[in-house]
Image (cartoon, rainbow, N blue to C red; front, side, top):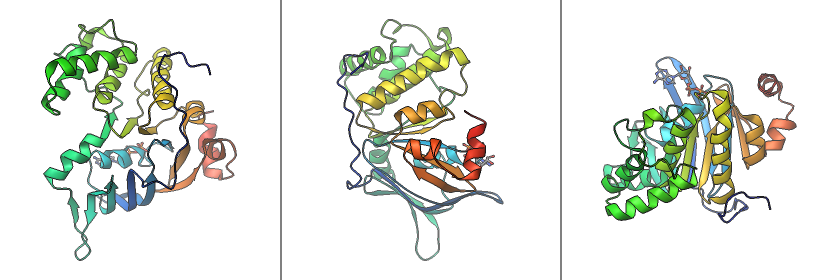
Length: 272
Ligand code: ADP
């Protein structure tokens, strides 16, 4: 194998008979009168790498924001690791979120990297990683520092620990954001168009880190992306979101190279 790191390459097969780590059950979302998601049914399996593609405004980001409880579904259930994160009451159709007690456990399972890096500007990059570990996880400080250094090396920033975000390039900031999510050891990582705010020459270094994670980490990954070649290379499954639904779902090759869905072909013409 041609791995450039000394990490063990896992190349795991996804076990589709395992219990899903996340299930969306007939999930709808409206913003005012705009019915954005019209019945999303999706099971995400442990270690599965999923790419979500689709036109701008089709609801890709909304799907993952509901999993971060940044948006409330209008209808349906979302289950994480067997626990209801969102549940629609049978009688009145009201949405109920997991109680605070359960929410902590569920949030521990999920990491997210945003389009805009959301780093703490007044903390060094080391402390950007250490702080969530000591404050949220209550990890002893020396342990948190060790783990953070390890993850920052992993994303190629081991020599920049004492720098502040403002002195880093966009690509480096995005790699800090990844290290900060990774130190929490989530079972599933969400990547929301993480390269779309970057200058073109910085995209490659960020994709390379994700590629490395996909090859070596057992966590599930869900990526909203417009990088079709990248999706082809690393995704076990690609979802094409269109008209408020998952219009196509299959292997990367099936969806990106061999689908006969005219709307998908039309969409792909703009990216390939
Ligand atoms: P995508 O990620 O596929 O580009 P989004 O999930 O960001 O799509 O958005 C889907 C639709 O929902 C868009 O029309 C967007 O304008 C709308 N939308 C998203 N978030 C909000 C919000 N907080 N308030 C109102 N409309 C929103």
